[in-house]
Length: 325
Image (cartoon, rainbow, N blue to C red):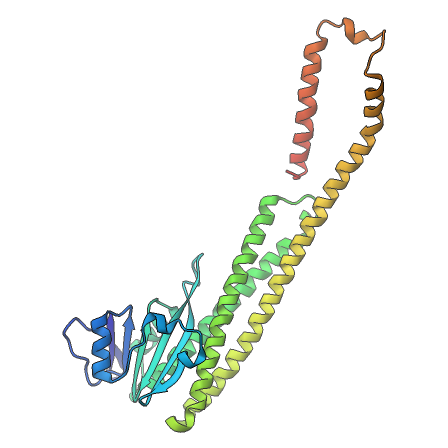
């Protein structure tokens, strides 16, 4: 789908293009979402830039993601998507600056795009260009990553309180442990994806800053790029801290589980040692005595069976009560 954005007074109006329609001259932002071959050719013919394919966007080499070709700057970054769902993913998004126009190519719906559309749909400056829209998009991406890291920090703190809860210091629940480990694993995976996105955005911002001499951007944009670099660096450091914190909680959790298991095994060992002498005596003599009152007891056999069943059930119930099972 190809959507063009045209300035209308103090707002930026979106206009989806149907097959066969021409791109308006006043369009400053061309957004290609899961584009078709015809839409790629239309943008290439009208704007004069080559649209990278999905395979090209997924290249990890910096030279394949950040380069200048025919006066247009090609920048591909890794953005977070579906971060509020149980299955967050990262997606490659290409930004192409061709003169005063911005072309974006994407195959997913990162939240910063919706945030920028909503912001510019309410108000945009009269001199809006592709460069200013790119700045708004990058700013929204950085803010979104910051929000995700803040949410991760809050949830990790809640998990930390569960891990070191004194009320569960004796006899924890395996389901609780599994839930904590599952939560920490998910947060660790999400943090690594955010860090990957921040590294990619940091390279893109640095590329724009190095291209500043040739692009001759206004002083405000140059200051904004420097602010973005500082924000990305601080968020990268924070993501590293969150990763270390999650690793610490995982180690602590596994250590507590190991201590609890050792205590249970120690109890079983003590019980086995206590019962070893009676077992040895019973094994040696085989209970073969001439005068045994139980030999003449009519209900002796069923009572013995019931005693065996009860002796098996009572330890099981005790272990369940102690939350060892």
